[in-house]
Image (cartoon, rainbow, N blue to C red; front, side, top):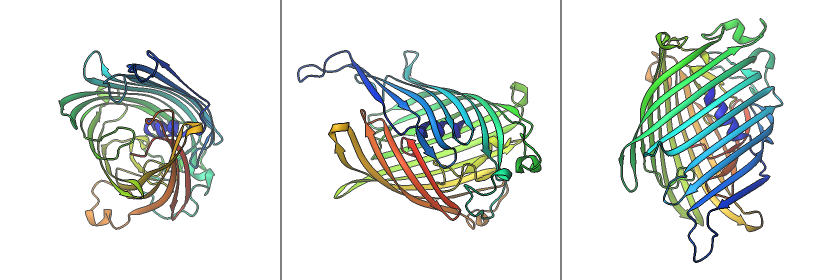
Length: 387
């Protein structure tokens, strides 16, 4: 659940009310700016097909220092409410060079109450017409969640254009359905975790990084693999194992404008006594755009996403840069023990286009994607590229 909430907070951005920069030195031809703080106060006025209209507020604070990439620190505080009954808050802190070292520490705390969470069943692959709006009484349910996620990224090897890092991971969350009647699918099917529970995962992984930019990559690659273990003897309600791999590749060519071709392969594999909110899923603005959130749920998922991205023009009066994307998503979830032939026999597809904009700092990118699938149309306002 925490991953989807993180995407939701990214998506709760449409208008920029204010941006301030505090400079330790004035930016002039004879003075080099060595320290700056850029704070964006963002009203959470947005729309997402999965959550409806979003209202609230966010504060993004970037602290930059000379020769420190991508930044000295990043802080986000957010609180939002949606027309589909979501009330949630989150605090995130991202600190490269933490503890006076080359290590990067990223932490996140969230809490949420959702009156229209979605559950379409485990292993449910039959087509649902207009799945975003179909039979809300059956597929929706009420839930509450709280969680903490912390990662320490430790560099093993750093070169001029690439780095190899090891990850130390701690993930805790508590999730429970609340006051759901017998007319709800989650009550009828009783999936693992339907009575609520907590997961405490400890894990490790590796990151191989060679992108020319973390936020607006046009060249290079990114590979991340992680393995997480949850056991009842150290505080989890379930004995689970989760493996994930995320592989991204970027290249650029020139056709009237510079165009970036971005590709991503993602897989997640789970085993053991896995609660429904920790299972692999497909469907939302970060997996299969055009399908509702967690439309497909099972032990494993395989996804491939490809995008063409470009920046088209600037409007100096508003300090903005504007561009667009074309995208194609394909993938599916599947149970443990499924044959390779069956995995690729029933792939789900979606496609679409989007608009992008950037204000005040190149690191801050807004996008609006419209995804089309055989089950409907998804519209997503969000911050940052999908990958």
